[in-house]
Length: 50
Image (cartoon, rainbow, N blue to C red; front, side):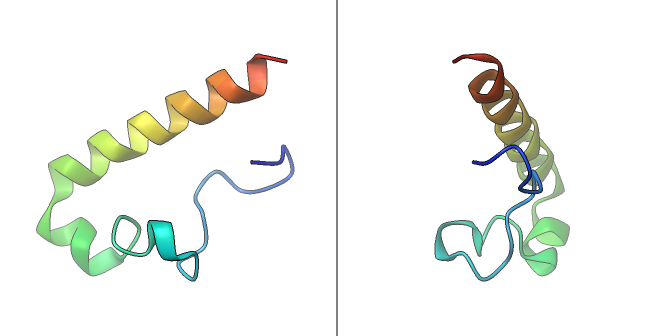
């Protein structure tokens, strides 16, 4: 992920369509929150490491 790219991927990206769909987020709020934390950690770690 580029530094200038928003942390939340666009819905059009196939890999993230299910996870970032608002309907899915409402059906599985805990799973969605956990996944968002995982993504944030992964993105931050990736940006910090050269």
